[in-house]
Image (cartoon, rainbow, N blue to C red; front, side, top):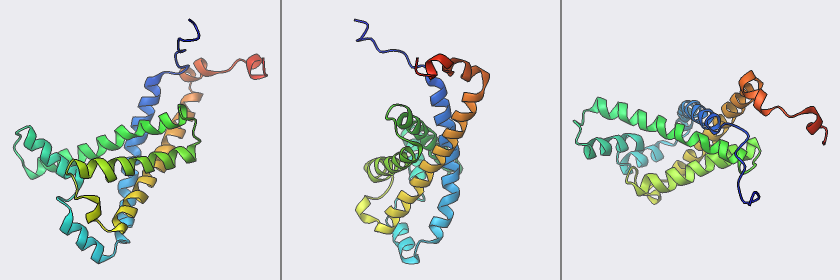
Length: 192
């Protein structure tokens, strides 16, 4: 019977979630900065094509507009702008713990977890959910360049979330509250 029962994790799950949310927020802000140079590399014809097919300035803004309409809230441009930014940040924050799951439970190394996290975010959100929910035009309406640029931005996100999560994780391991629960006995560490 004891074999069938799972042992509780040797760490506090809330620490992983908090680290992931924090790393997700920072990674979202870093990705926002990285999108500027990625945008500069966009050929003018691609930029014109994107503006012609997309339903709004950004998928987050379209989501904010749809949310305000569903909640019967006065649709002011300022409300849409604030709501759109909140949706964008919340999505990035919410995806941050995925990196921790990949590291802790899938056993991936930081580089592999970063690539997997960013690629999965791009495929699941940009390539599936966003167009399915009508927050962007269908994928086949966008040039290949647009989709590659989106993947590159999400790889930046994955890298940034990895750097922040690894840094926070290491700093927490050195703190008295975290380290006392996780230190290995010298006898156990020596193979005993």
